[in-house]
Image (tube, rainbow, N blue to C red):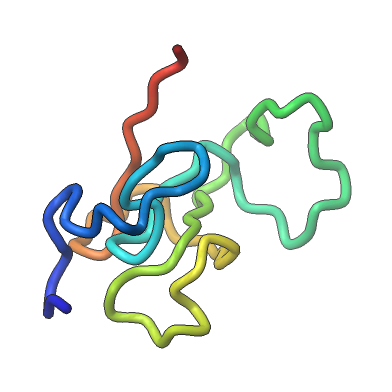
Length: 97
């Protein structure tokens, strides 16, 4: 393992069934959604859950490499201030085919 984030594609045996690499374990990932304490009222069409005016918190998901294994999974969900910049928090570039 690494004592920091691993290079992209370093674990080719970890490819997902959808053909995606590096889906968990490097950094926590920003989400577009505003923070809500539970899923009551979540949009059912797959759109982002955004409040107007926007609150100060945004959601991040996934586990980072420095977490315990129980927290290094994609279902991990929490929040922090939208202006935070850190080595443990990033985003994922995605493309629609």
